[in-house]
Length: 190
Image (tube, rainbow, N blue to C red; front, top):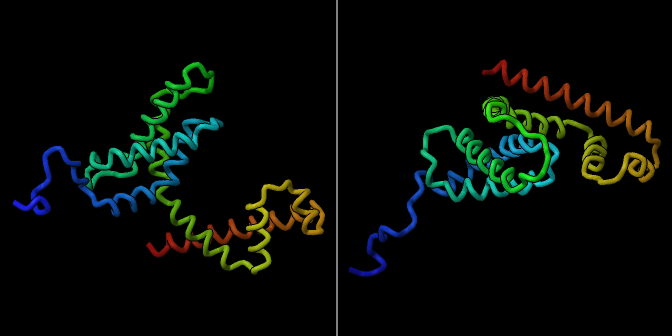
């Protein structure tokens, strides 16, 4: 038989139950809940970003173990939890705050439930940002993308710190109200 048309050897990589593109789509959708979960389990730990990357790599490595039709988010949280535990073992001499296994499971369960509306909240935020006047939107974007202190930022704009604080507070309040209205409207339609 022609080597190109031969069936794969038994030693070849196992096909994934989901196609890679479908798996990537699910994994991309879970990034924010995954970050929140790992950050909650490693509060204040500067290595949390590394653990998130390790968890993503392990999730990708184990993608063949995921059964299509089951809860993808719960599965990724379980993989992430083991990565957190591995990180803690490596950092055993560190005297950081430690959570019980029961609390970690509670956090995972609650985050899986709470984070289902994050996509809706992000969409509402995007829409509300677009509804702002361009100057207001630009001010918010520049402020929160800036590494400057508030005093440096105000000085750069030629405005007082107090004036900038008041303006930013009003814009955040306006955005919060807009987001709540949009979420309430979405809830009414369902």
